[in-house]
Amino acid sequence: MIGALRVAAVRGGALFALCCALSVHAQEPLPDRRGAGPPVVTGAPVIAPTAPAATGTVSAKPRTAAQESLLDILQQLEQVQAELRQLRDAVEVQGFELNQLKARNRDLTEDLDRRLRVLEQPAVAGDTPGSAVVPPPANTESKPVTPEQQKDYDAAFELMKQGNYAAAVKAFREFNVKHPHNGLADNAQYWIAEGTYVQRNYKQALDEFNKLVSAYPHSQKQPDALLKVGYSHYELGAYDKARKTLNEVVTRFPNTTVAKLAGARLDKMKKEGR
Picture 1 (spheres, rainbow, N blue to C red):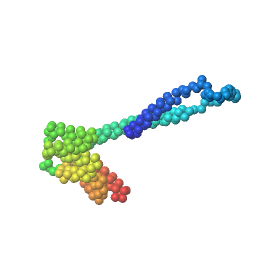
Picture 2 (cartoon, rainbow, N blue to C red):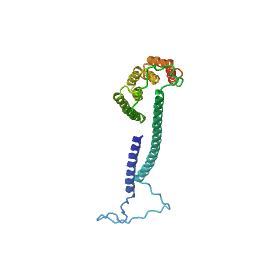
Picture 3 (cartoon, one colour):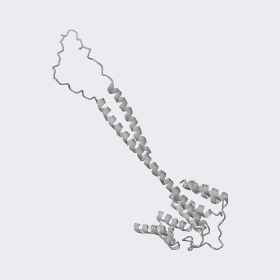
Picture 4 (tube, rainbow, N blue to C red):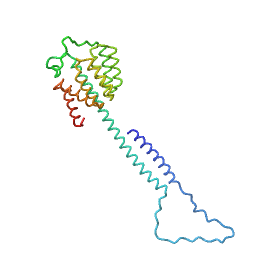
């Protein structure tokens, strides 16, 4: 769209310059030869000029080629200006829609992180749909989170909200290296996998989600990670593995949002003949 604007602007500028040049050329007066008599030939008889016969009508002065070209260029210039206005309007509309999408993405990311943090709190029986399906072992306690750890985590998550996924993935990796066995390690690992998935690096995302599933078996993010394992298999074209994983999600976490999402993807695969 920006390229089209530049081309139209250059085209309009060239037409305007040519238009001005032709206008000046068209206004230049022709040399007046009325005062000059016929050439005198020595020795030839002088013949008096005869007056033209009166016709009674005055014919319209025909347009010159320069004037015709000038009119044509003016019409083209008006067309280019109209196209420029349309392109500017389209750019403004697309810019507005892009800002809306960015804001929506930030809101969804913040909402998801807020939900994950709520799930990390000690669960009360009946509070969460999946708590009765995969309860944590009795001797598992939530690790405390220090202010420094929370600060580093929030800094990495801010990059995720901004849509800077590559930098966010790097920051979360550094977070888990700097703070091993911290209370947010599984959450950070989830965002490493999610950030990789959003960048459509599905093979790497599959490895990262599987790492969360295996390294944090009692994490509250197990359902979401397992769902994304199925999604990653689907994107990689491994439809048998995708179907098996998605069915596992439906079986292990019934009556949950992830189970509904897994069922919807299974229905889609069925319609596609996968």
